[in-house]
Image 1: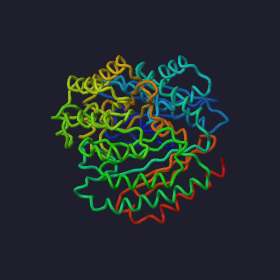
Image 2: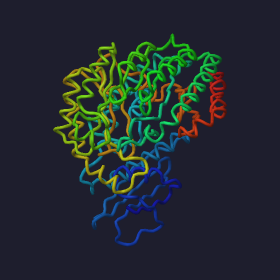
Image 3: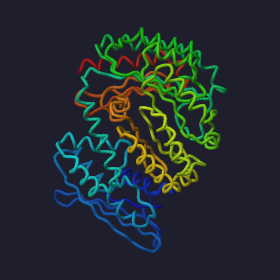
Length: 489
């Protein structure tokens, strides 16, 4: 799709909306569209106290135009936000009549739709008023607006229980036994990167000790901890014990409400590792099959069977874990609505406290072919997600947090489901940006939330293990920002 923009210096809202609506095409801005070409024209102007955004789409010999208006106020930020929404909505209304499948999130882009809904709850809107706004102004479907509003309510409840000096800790272990075909995280297969693990653990433990001292000086309270990856249980039982001993020695954990470790891959889990986690206070783990179809598991690069998932789950229960999450992915190659339904039925039959239903997303940097394959799965993924929602609801699970990614199959979302009282608070804190998250390890992104909750200061660690292992001095220096941040609370 080629497009022209007049009256808008930054065309990001137009490009973002087109990438959402036309994921198989690469939008290209031009100064003047050739006569008769398929193109989108966007014009933004001002009349009195209103911004007027007008979009006209020409496609297959037809032209459809749409216009949206937004108020100009004394607040530059509010004016910009309203103008952006007007532009996106005008583009949405001009382009969607040409589409076979309309995104169910409408013109609402971004990764945090629940945070959007929570903003209105905090302004005093009722859920019914938010639902009406999301439908009329943002074209969101009934099912998606219900997800956002419910998750927003849970996030608001979590926020009310937080003190300004409460923080959470994330520790990253960027290693896996093998790399899954769909993965776009910073993670390394141990066949190639295993030699880095010992040095990585040395550096990580040193960062933990240093950060723990800063947290004590700043008089901050750790309320949740999450060790993720990668796959943390790629570490040996001895390495896990060293890591957890270091954590226990560095941080005061008496204020913690939960301690989560992504055990993740069944082929990395042993009874010894599970007992080590339990010994050091870990009370939530993940055992993630992604699919209970052996053919699908093989196709995505998983080195375990569906039976191994069942065996590992039974082992974890035997060790005494009473809060277990299990992940699935809708849209994997070779999966069908029927086989996906089998996965959901099998997991429900195990009665885990949490089941997370992800939607397959094309990797970062995916080409047009990969994005097109993902987009073509819209109807299949919709059926899968509907199956999951129906079955999980009937089994007593409810959604409690969600997020979106670019180039997700069908433009859908990832949703965490849980039994009553088993919400993973870290997931809510992190995804809804409710508190400061201090991130340790390669690729860690610490987010310092201002006291009014409106600004975030980011401190990044080196992305890859080999860079991280040689950057401890710089990493520790970066963590000093915690002291300055805490002094303003």
